[in-house]
Length: 293
Image (cartoon, rainbow, N blue to C red; front, side, top):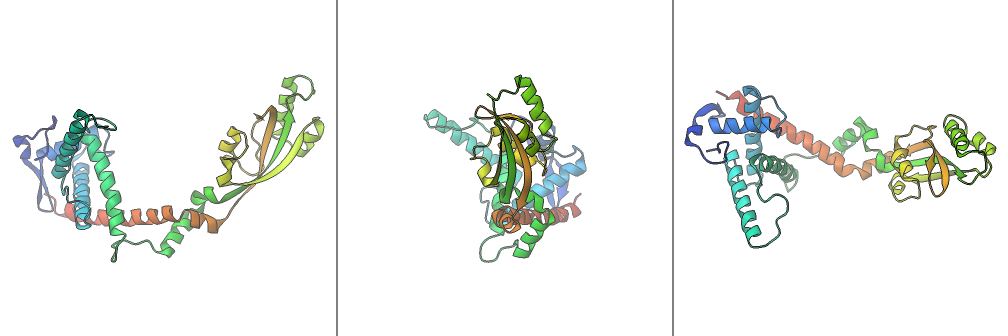
C-alpha cells in the first residue's frame, strides 16, 4: 500500500484505478504521482495518460535495476517509501545519539523519491554496461560519432587561445583619465597596434595559453571569464589590472580534436550509454503500457 497524503498507510487507497502489465495501480499510488507533479518533482502533465506512463517508467526502472542486481532494497514504489522510512529512522537515532546528521533530519517523500530514482538510474546504467557480459556498451565508433555530431560542445578543455594585450599605466599623462578611457574604448573597434603608437607608455604583447591554464594565469579575472566567449578579432572593454588599463583581443582559438576526444571520452561514453539505456527503458515502458487497463 502506498502512503496517503500524510505519509501513513490508508486501506481505502488500495482501490485499483488501473493495471499495468497485469499489476494493479492503486488509488494511493496514483495520487502520490499526482502530488509529485503538483510539487514540481515531476515535470509532466497531470493527466491520466502521462501519470500512468511515469508509473510504468518507474516500474520498468525498478525491474531493470533488480535484474542488474542493484536493488535488493526495493522493487516498487512501496518498497522505496519503506526504505525512506528506514533511512529517516536511522537519521533520527543518529541525532539522538549525538552523531552528525548532514542535511535535513527527515527526507520528505518527494525528496527521497527524486534522489533515489536518480541514484538507481545511475547505478543501473553502470551495472548494465560493465561486467563480463554487458547489456549496453559504447563502442569506439559510437563514441567518435557522438563527438563528431557536435564537436564544439567538447572543445573547451582542448582549446588554445592566442590573444594580444594593450597595456597602459594609470600614470600616463594623456590629459584627463576620461580622455584616456575614451581612447581605449575607441580602440575596441580600431587597430590595437595603431592605438599603441598614440599613447605614451602603451605596450603590446601577444600571449598563447591553453584553456586549462586560463584559470591559473595572471589574466584579469574578467578576461579569464570572458576569453572563451570572444570571436577572433573581438576586444574586451578596458579592464583595470595591476595599476594599468588593459585591452584583450582574441586573435584565434585553436582546437585540438584529438585532445578533445581524449579529454572528453568519459563524458562521451556516458552520453552514449545514457541514450542506449533510455531506449531500453522506453521499450520496457512501452511493453507495460501496451497492457494497460
